[in-house]
Image (cartoon, rainbow, N blue to C red; front, side):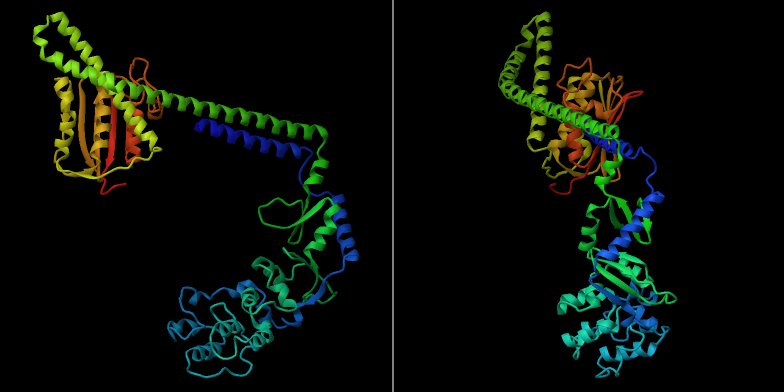
Length: 530
């Protein structure tokens, strides 16, 4: 099933990639001289025909270099000396702690005054404290914001906040709005700008595009320091460009851009892109989409058919397992009764009886294997394990394999742990996986079969080796449902059950095909139910 999913994803990816190439077969995606002329004409027409919402002179409120810092997000970052200090400088907690880190900053006197005020060592702040530079505390917060967040004096009063808005950092205005309501004038624009847009504004970029506005700077001959912008609503811009072949986006490094105009990208809209493509290109594009759609549909139908087939097999297996259990149990009882009279039979009859017994026991193993497989399937592949104390690992494994040692004398060899130990695990499921591997080696491998135990990194390792040659090279191939070797007469479920159980347990099944067939179970210790 994984192969089908990968094929579907590959087909979809190829369709989009081919379609993208097909649409731009005409040449490189870059503006021609005619495109640049058209863009310039659009800009001129926009300024002539669309009235701005207003003209904003940011110098009127941010005239000094110190105030301009209140527009730049860079100055809202904490100074290196206080970046790691977990102190809230708007409360009266942790007073004068790590204060030595602030001693080297400029205008330390203002820092000292604020520290005294927040720690209740002075009752009021000097006149002009907020309106004179520096406006930003070393933490990156404006002094106005620190006062607003404190619970002292008049600083939470809406009128005080409105009068001191020019002294809040622009990145703080959105939070202030949440507390006091709508802001006025310039500040209603600034609070809607993100950090990148504020950075462009503080640098005096010619055009700034936001979700709400288009800011177009006014240039005055010989006055490069005037920060004045026409402010248009974004909806006005979108309406104007509706019938043009272009859309505007912000330029981002690494992204394709048809024509870069400062921090703005002019790109063709989708409608115009299709106009550029000739008819054969469009036919090729939609033809590819159609082909991929058909392929994906066929693959999905195949997946559904495969799923239905798997469900049909499982249903058949459930029915057969249920119907076989009673006659198998009856035959086992008959064999036990006949076994008591074994000595009365002649040699030919005894040999036939032994062959019959072997086939009945093989049939019993198939029924049990199918039952374990269906039990795991009914639980959605999630097995609830329990934890029990195993006093001796060596004795536990030796007892598990003792029937095989008795049944196949001199064909099964057990190498216990050099130093026996106790263990906690699910006795039932560990028994199933170990027995399945041993039976698999005895049925399909060549003797002698060696079972060896190791203890490594808090895991119990059970190694089962036989001297036969396996026809499979990959564990994934041989552990699929209903997959078995050409010479096998089994159900093809044994190794699938082993792998499913051990992986649900958090362990691992390792496999080696040459020179001998080797399976190694990595069984983790279970401290409690999982």
